[in-house]
Image (cartoon, rainbow, N blue to C red):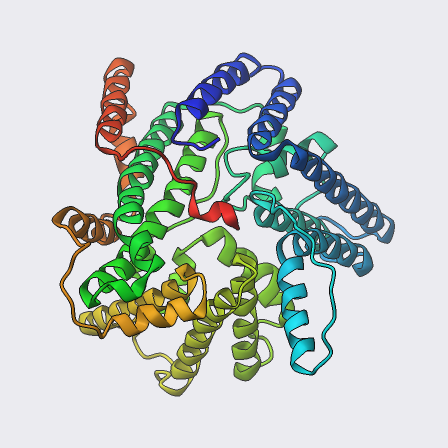
Length: 482
C-alpha cells in the first residue's frame, strides 16, 4: 500500500477519524493505531507481521531486563551503566535478524566464489529468502531503543504496547525516518493534540511530498534514468550525464518525499517526527552532506557505530579509520552488494581526505572562521559531483554497468532521451535546494490563520493539480528495498 494511492487515502481517512474519536482514551487509541499499522504492513506480506511482533517482544524484554539490572546496581536516570552483556545480547539479536534476511544469500554466494578460487568448491545451502519491507529501519530502531535504555538516555517503555507501536507505527515503518524511542515514547504517554499549525504543516508536507514523488521522481525515472542505466552503451555522453544528474534528483525527491509524507501523516495524527533532509545538495563537504542527507540514519550511525568505535577521542588516525568503517558499514546497510560497499567506501574515503585536509590546513587558534563565496561554490560543486559519482555505484546493478556509465560520459552522440521537460525537472529539482531552508514551515505559519474552508480549497486544488500532471501509475519508493 503506497502513500500516493487511492487505497492508502481511504485507509488513512479511516485511521484519522477513528483515532481522533478515541482521543480521550489513549490506550485504546494506541491499540487501534497498532492494529492499523499491522494491517498496513500486511498489504506487502502478512507473514512478516509476526516478525514485527517478535522483534518488538525481543526488544521490550531485553530493555526490561536492562532497566531491572540498572535499578539493582543503583544506576540513576541519565547515567550509563548496567550489565553490558544484556545490551550486547539485544543488539546482536536484532542484527542477526537483519543479517539473515538481508545478507544470507550475499555471503553464501561470496563464500562459494572464494572457496572455488582456492579449488575448494562446495555446495553451500542457498535459501530463497524474501526480504521483509523496511526491515533495516525497524531493526535499527530496536537497536537504538535497547542501547538508549542501557545508556540511561530513555527509560524503558511502560508497556509492551508502546514498544510494538514504536516499531510498527505505519507512517515511518517501511522507509523511515528512524524515530528514536526518546522522541516517540514520551509522545505515546500523553494524549495527543492536533493544533492548527500541526495540521497545516502536515498537509503542506503531504502535498509537497506527493509532487516530488509522483511528478519529478516518477517522470525522471520512467523517461530517463531507467532506460539509460538499463543499457548505457546505447546512449551518448549528454544522455548519460543527464541520467546521472537525473538520478541525483530522482533519489532525493523520492526519498525526501516519503519522509515529508511520513512526517505530515504523523502530524495529522498528533505526533512529531524529526526532520530527515535539509537541502543536502547545497553541502560544501561530504561531512556536511551527511548532516543533511537521511539525517536519522547518519545520526544513528554516528551515535551507535562511530562513537562506540572510539569516534575522534583517540586522535586523528583513529578518527579517520572509524569514519571509514562507519561509512563502509553504512553502505552495506543499504544492500547486500559490492557496489554498495564501494559506495560507502567512496563516501568514507572522501571524509578521511577532508579530515586530513582540515588537520593540515588548520587555521591558527583564535583566527576568525570565514569561508569565501568562491570556496563555498567550489566546495558545493566538488561535493555534489562526488555524490553523483557515488550515485552511479548506488544505482547500477553491477560494477560492469557502473563502468559502462562512466565510459559513456566520454562517448560522443546525440541526446535522444533528454527533453526540455526532463531538463526542467532536473534544474528545478536542484534549484529547490536553494529555497529558504524552512520554506514549508514558513508557509504553514502564514496559512495557519486562514479560514478552514480557504485552507481546504487550497490543499484540494494543489492535490488536483498534482494529480493532473503526474504520469500514470506509482512506482514503489526506492528505499523500500532497504
